[in-house]
Length: 470
Ligand SMILES: [Cu+2]
Image (cartoon, rainbow, N blue to C red; front, side, top):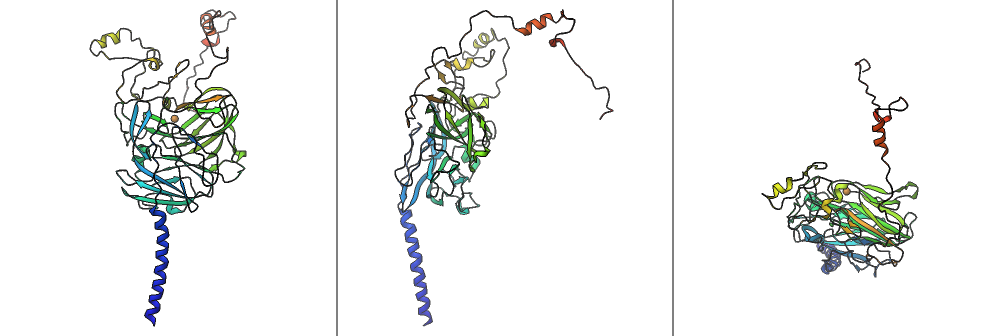
């Protein structure tokens, strides 16, 4: 009798196990087709047609990954793979990314969604995906070795969790990170609120991008992966100005911009002509009582910030990282300071030996924005963007917020250069010039009319008289 009972229990258990596996296998068997993007243009917002409704974001020079609903679960398919990214027109870099691009596609879900992400590894080495900032089961956090076995080359792993809180997040590998992030593996993640949230405003435009950086030797195509600080490509979504699309909005739109930093240094992100408030971090929406107006917000390494403002001033407003070296493209950091050095005649002499020789910087480096200087193939010129009044003398982490009265709601297309109303642009002054005051005080220094020395001649030098007071 006893063996039969055991056998019965065994079969009962086996049946349950098989049924359980069958469900999982049927879900796995029909892996969603990976969607690959080859364009570097900003894709229009992906308006959801399945699942809960939300107001989609626009990823600068990027796109949102389509999903499919499978029994109430939102399924995505990421493919980690080598890609070629056009960093600016004519400048292509070998990177690693997801689904054809670096960064990978933005993933947009709604608070409370159950999300399943299939990750196929087509890299030459193992990888994982960490979902930065998310509340999730520990085994889904993606730290190779700690939370899971790394995904071997050629294999597909599944991550599954509920997007528990709304906010601005990102994803990136937690396996051989130094190499994989230096090669461009990263992506944006937005969890929209499921209902009206007291700390989340409805906005008319919602932009997002990642700050990233590469070290690509001029004339080469593959980033150096052991660089720690001395990067020469400072990019937004692996693009540099003038390759970064402009942020085009309608006057009086409420605008949200979400930024994440996956470089090795901080970036003070600065907007002209408007004040914004930081309304969220990777920790979620900030309570309104904690907010204040700013025009620059520092985004530290590994941080995310979302800023909001009313775009009430028409025009073409600069929007950039405030570190001036980050609004430049590739250059040698060993350039000597030549300001004030008289180079007349020198270049001609050297050109007799080396005909292509150029020496720059005698009157600053602005000349470089205008000059057709010879540069190695596949290199972004150092500072090139042209606008209606001439060279912008910027590269790197720079773009323009275009605010227009007639930009239609939902229209993200570039309206072209701003038409300035007559008399509203800084112009040359042609009236009489008086002598600058500082010259007068120097001239009068020798003959003070009132018997006292003028301020420019006063020198208070105090020498220490001993060490008694120490
Ligand atoms: Cu910067």
